[in-house]
Length: 626
Image (tube, rainbow, N blue to C red):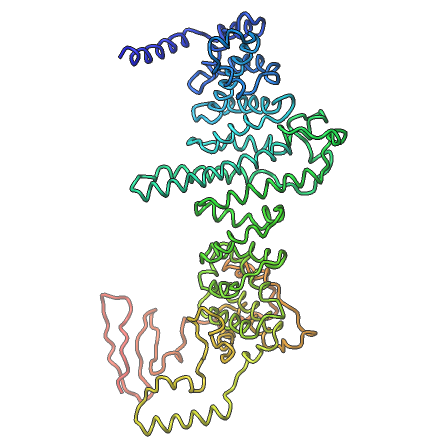
């Protein structure tokens, strides 16, 4: 009982001791610590002020003093593992140990405590942004010094780990790292290594979360924290600039050992010494070796990240960035095939966003996906014409249907499905559809039979026989024989498999209806399909990107900028005196007396009674009696 009450009393005593120090006292303690080893006991006192709860001035003063104290000592301090082993010695062994070793071991423990306090301040929501910037610079300086000039990856891992698992907002700290430190090659390298480890930990943690939730435990808070950590990892990994073309001087700039050629190569392998045969070449890493190492770590970190259960907003951002920011820099882009095929099979907007990356793997890296066109056909829905990424989708759709080896039934199915959608989409979508069908008819002459199809003589005879049988039986409903009637469309619009749509037995009658479309640009553009598109020498393909991002606003703007040679005008031989003429109302005649409208005699001389209403200014209108 006494031990339990003594702990809070010690805490209260520490707080009282902490509050009795003023800013000038901390300056004095710092000067004493830097002047002589005799005042080394000031170090624990200064450490207590490096916390988010301390006033910013006190925390800053203590930080500067401790940083000045540890900067020359950190490279020669024993490792954390050696410090832990020395602290676990028995009293007899400790008495025989070297006092200098014991002193440095104690300093190492205080240095680790100082680094943990700095990281705690950096990720805290209570600390000011100015203090966070100074703290982050101090942390990165200790990362830079490391162990005899090597990159101190352990400290950097602690920093990124605390950022990823922090429940507070760390956007300022992430922006600071991105703008100030991600330009260095070694920081990028160890960032990828750290993110790979954290992604693997989150993956196993999510598996345990699913098990606990299945057993009846409440894992919602844990799942929310995992999603927050995944979002933070995505922010970091997407803001690390990729390695494009390396120059020996500009892009190979190192954070650890910068300005000293001897430290550049060792920063990539801080714990492994090179053979003597390679020591003469270890001063400078070639751009090729750096690019190879970075690309390998880049690939591992992204593949580990994509295995995580990504939230929907992160999922969409990843699919958007993959084609430009990820795939060109992977060591083996085929490793993304599982992730992309799963995304493509989801359907909806996720499939549309995954199509771009999947198309790159198929065309540039030899990926085989048997059900690709079947899934692509299923994406042709009216909702795609108002989707956010519709422009890129239509350009990819046109590229996917460009191959001359595409079967005729497949090209016909896409052309027919697009023409059917033209009846229900906005005018901008109709323009895209006409452009796509124009290119399909020009690339695949075998489907030009869809442009104009007539009933053959055999079909006409069958229709006559069918009418005679129907008249003889007195049955108007023939059910299964409806498909034999002329003008019947054999296309199955609800069929998801393009092979079974019977598109080759149909026609593009929907395109003919667009000739009378209410929007003038659509009706004008349809006329381009009246040309003989089989003559490739006299026709050219239509650029889909000219129509893919269209809308009502773009169509209206183009019409306003369009110069029209002949404009219909309202022309009158005399100034009109009424809104409607008498010929617009046959059987009625109107006269105007004193500004009031009255009825008059008709052609037969029959008179009408004029009923005057004194409560109104105008007379009532009566129909002429016959």
